[in-house]
Length: 215
Image 1 (cartoon, one colour):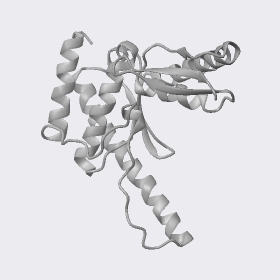
Image 2 (tube, one colour):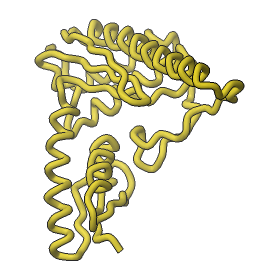
Image 3 (cartoon, one colour):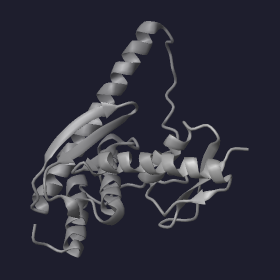
Image 4 (cartoon, one colour):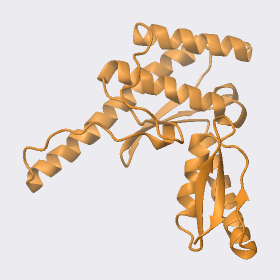
């Protein structure tokens, strides 16, 4: 791609409006204190049948709904890639309670941005495109060029090392500001280690994780 970062931002905005048929509707739920990775509870639907057969049918329907989210997201991202003149293959999956979409290819760094910030923004636009089609707030996870997978491995190593330092020194340690995705990876890892706990402090974009000795 030959365009500048401002041009890319403008193209993304155009893609969002064209794909959704107008400006995105406001989200029906507010993100938690750590942003998109701490989404609020999903809509609760009344259960009319608690039998095992009903549970299986409900699970299958949930998977079908998540697969549909992935397909909607893929359509949106294909249109965006055409607009910004970038090539990438799309991989769709369902992990746990969320759809996962990965854009795979080379030369996709502009869609990741510094510290993954462009990727976070693109993920939100993709979630809004799904919301426009389904009327349900999505928790879809978007990865580009394997960025999240690499960053997850790096953060797990970092969190483990920080946990050991905090246990040895018996005093808290603050990490550098992170995106919501990065903070969640750290919190999840710290939760598996005895003797330490973690919390987030500060406001975006300077919000960070603090690792503390367990009481």
